[in-house]
Amino acid sequence: MITAIIAALTMLMGQASVQPAPSPSVTPDVPVYVGNPATHFTVEERVEGFDPDGDARLLLVAHFFDAQNQPTRILANSDLDWMADRGQVQWQNRMRYGSPAAIVLVNTDGPIVATIHANMPALGTVVVHSDTRTWTGQRVVAKALGPRMVQIGWFPRATAPVRVVRIDARKRRVPIATLPAGSSTYRDATVQTGAHYEYVVTQGNRVAQLAVSVPGPLLATSIDDAAGKGMWLYWSLNPLDDNYYAKLDPNAIVEQAVKAGLHYVELRTAYGAQWLIPAAAKPTIDAIIDGLAARGIVPVGWTVPREVTFEDLSASMRTIDYRTARGTPLRGIALDLERGGDFLGGDPHGLAALWTYEYYLREAVGPRYLIVATVEDPALEHLDNTTYPFREIARYADVLQPMTYWRMLARQANFSPDVVREFMRRSYRTALEQAGRTMPVSIGGETAPDDRNGYPPAAEISASLDASKAAGAIGVCFFDWSGTRSYQWNAIGAFPWTLK
Picture 1 (cartoon, rainbow, N blue to C red):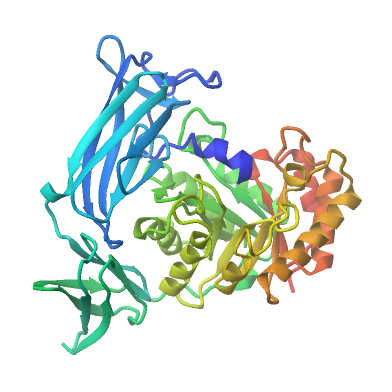
Picture 2 (cartoon, one colour):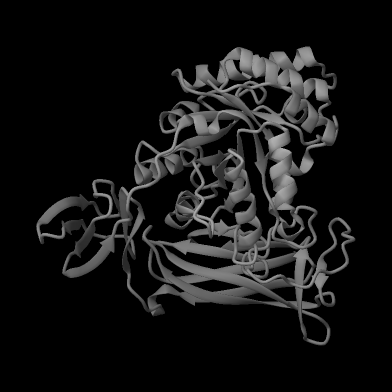
């Protein structure tokens, strides 16, 4: 989260198989290869077809080659610009596809010209041409997002009204929507859990009929699952990183959580649409989840949304549906709702994306599944509802979780336990003021270091817990596990937080 998390996110690798690790010595701003340095690159285009958002999807993947024209692979420090003459371009986490990549989304038919420039390594420019008019595949798509929502998309964007009729298991036909010209998608939030439907989508003289099965009911969860003392835990899929999943010790993690008296742990499962528990990592992550649950510590999922798309929302839904091999569930989801191109809130959606993502997920899961909204701190970052949509986010959340990282965000150089106490009180009060209603608040505390101000000492950790509880917060969740020092763990463990 904020500066610390962005650096880690750019190092993620989403492949199930473990690649050979190069030397662990990483020089900043110099590419790290599996193989020889690259001298040239190509760009592969993969047509991914059409989705329930009504978009055509073109995946672009960069491939690098050395002086002998042999493939080489970059694990760190590449920098590519991805541009297209129309539509939306989203860069993908390095190594999600085994190499730097981007996805182009368009909702009208015609040519696409994509330009890819390699800044690091400095290898020049590649131009890719595609044309959606030549693509094959079903152009009207319907899929269930969760037990309470089906989403239907049509490509290209409609030039005339679109009529949607739903047929239930008894063959009853119910007109459910007429969409205007210019539309691309419709979300049906009136479906029944576990039901089977057919949809008839009519555009002029074109008719498509699609079958959809809606998932069964979700696990009922509680606000208490995100109360008390907590900790964020994320891992990397890149063997260069200290928190590479294969380096994690599940038993040590569970024992540390027990010793610290944690009530819950938020585990990051997805960054945007990238799933962070591939097959190779699943045994390790499952062992952590199973071990925590066996000791009475609640495992909660944590995702970092990037776009209000069906694909991205599906990664959060996959988190909600997740079960270990033994069947242990995650008992809630925390949505990291931040601004900027690495998160939500970048162009072209703006601030509305920060709450519409959560709104669609809430509609998909219903009212009984725990959603924690992890938000930017209104006090430390001097935000209100004109600059960040706290009120809208609070409307669909069960718990509001401001990231009160005092040493990262405070505009001062001197800290003390009394200063931290005032930060906690002010953040709690301001979060509720901006939310516009009384609701549970769990403070996001800080153990990670700031480049200028270093690690928070034990006295500040203790003060943050004491002040948050006194103010009325239901708990404090610290960022983050990998950055927490032994004296900070001791301070967390020494503070008694008994749940009501």
